[in-house]
Length: 162
Image (cartoon, rainbow, N blue to C red; front, side):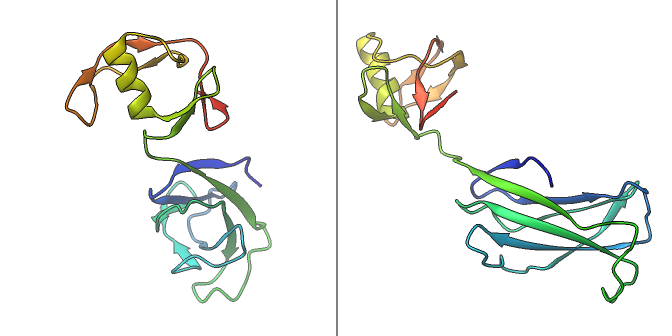
């Protein structure tokens, strides 16, 4: 089982199964279910061989839930004879928020959206909270202003240090 793959919510889920034998004549099928055990639309997926024993395809869109992919290797195109040399493997896909307007909790405990916090910083010049070594050159605010520069130190985004 893999440690986990982070995928931005809405991005294509990158299914891939590398056969240790490098066999190019097998047939790989992947069942994809969410954390509630519900099959994703189109599951199971047949993965095409892309080279060197790697079977891979991008499917669907990552929901805001964990996904579990189980890869089973077959000896036949009818998916009836499971390979005795290639055991099933599992990948875990964890959702990552794709929107920069995530909630930031600054060091004083106040909660603001990224855009409003940065807009306030840019307009007032005051430091409400600091972000750990993130460069935001050319970041556009809703009013059309831009922020260029670097914020640093220790702010927290949804419980995780950047």
